[in-house]
Image 1 (spheres, rainbow, N blue to C red):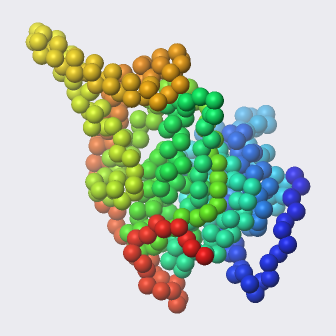
Image 2 (cartoon, rainbow, N blue to C red; image 1 turned 120 degrees about the vertical axis):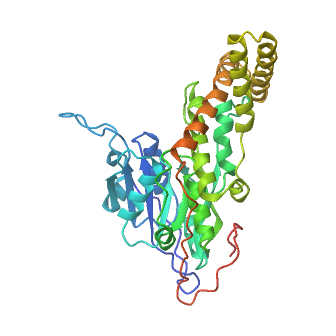
Length: 373
């Protein structure tokens, strides 16, 4: 792939040197990886000094046959000299990112990208400005994430959920971290096996250790991935991760991370009403069973309508919302109970004091303001 022409360089006396950076991409070998890397190459600005692809698939090869989803096949020619593929071990994105940044070598900045994002046309140039403006105590610089939604209809429930990434704090779909900061807190917590909460956990630990996090100017698009009608049911596994966050950071972490609380309390009530109705019927307590069944029905109907009302209201969407709205409350409750058991021995995160770099000013209070020029 031919590299586009670059703008004329600015006089070195007028602009600080751009620090080297490595790009780390955990991947399952999806075709979207090609679009991600080609967009990176097309963007104006300095290319990464290292590209590390972390192959996090369970099975990567079939004996005697080429692997059509090998991540190396998606690397543009211009990046091949600096590209490395390492194995993630199918242990989830937190472990994959740790494997990636540790394999990147002594590069001062690590930029994590998901394999389904599309960096903007000026991404590399904007990243360079983000890194130059970062203060000595800045551990990470976020990107501006946009989620394209259909222009000719209302978004579906899944599309609205994905659109929430545009306002998520510290999302690692595109986040640049200083290597020194990652080393100071030990990187991502690999107990988070899903692409959920591992980003907030790392950010909170860095802030607790005295680092700053800043909002950058670079722009990245996060298209909505295709998904089947049961995707909302599978995402309920995140309730177990929320239990781990409670154990590690206390029950106020929601406010500190500006994370939406979700409907777990309501799901627990609706599930409890369903169980009480079933028990009442089995014990011959028909009035109790009827009251609890009515409560379950009312709660389920409210939940379904809350998901149907803002959507396209097509037959397929309404059917999907009706079916999953019945199943989500017990699924959420189950994963919450599972999290309580699995993470019962988890202890609050120990703070890792970060030694200030030579000549650096004292660390500021917790901050997430945009970096300023």
